[in-house]
Length: 131
Image 1 (cartoon, rainbow, N blue to C red):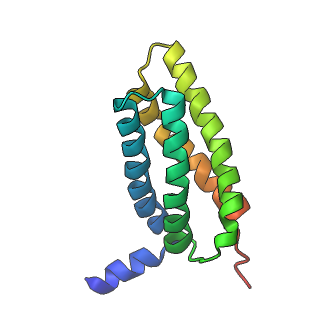
Image 2 (spheres, rainbow, N blue to C red):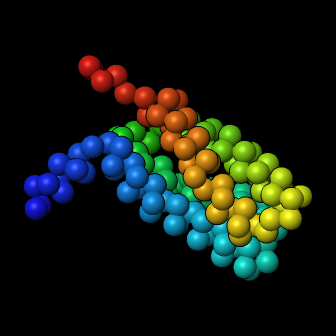
Image 3 (cartoon, rainbow, N blue to C red):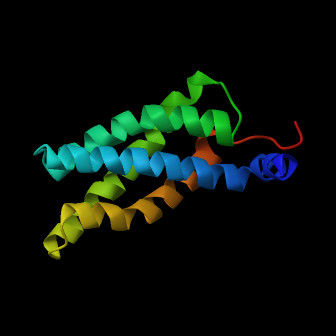
């Protein structure tokens, strides 16, 4: 049984889903906490994103892409700057449609997460497979 688990964890996509689940709970939990504490949704999203970037950089870099290269943090921040803008735009559209910030944030988790993964794979952690 332990060998099957090790084989499964070697698959990058499986590692990504596991790490993404942890990162999602962390990031969304922080967003909800900040909203609960009275922060405006724009600032709650901003602070949750910044703190989440640091947490996600280490978990995604180490566990999914197996890199210790801290110099990639600047590209990683760039990706999350783009995802932040998409997130705030989505939250604003949901607010105009009468959807609350909690629900809007929850709805956006999957599309924003997919955008972040694709951008990270393409622009941050791109690896030459034959190198």
